[in-house]
Image 1 (cartoon, rainbow, N blue to C red):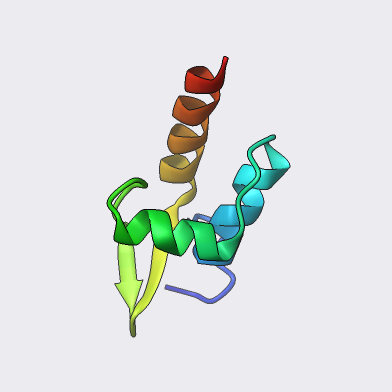
Image 2: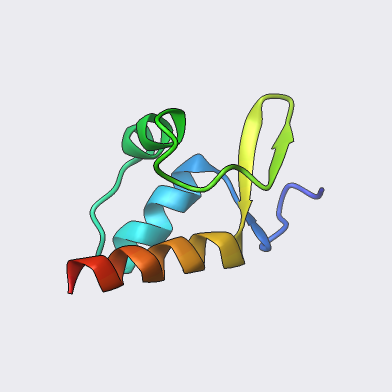
Length: 69
């Protein structure tokens, strides 16, 4: 995986994506929710760093938005 691969988002990018789409998340919340099994399992883990496919994050965001409406 290349460092600038736009298909994958790390934990802070995951939080930023959600926030940009109307859901208030920060990196700590993503970590806590991940640890509690409330967000999707990481699609890739490299040297302990979790990465999610952008499509995984988009799908999760859409599910959360539907629940809120």
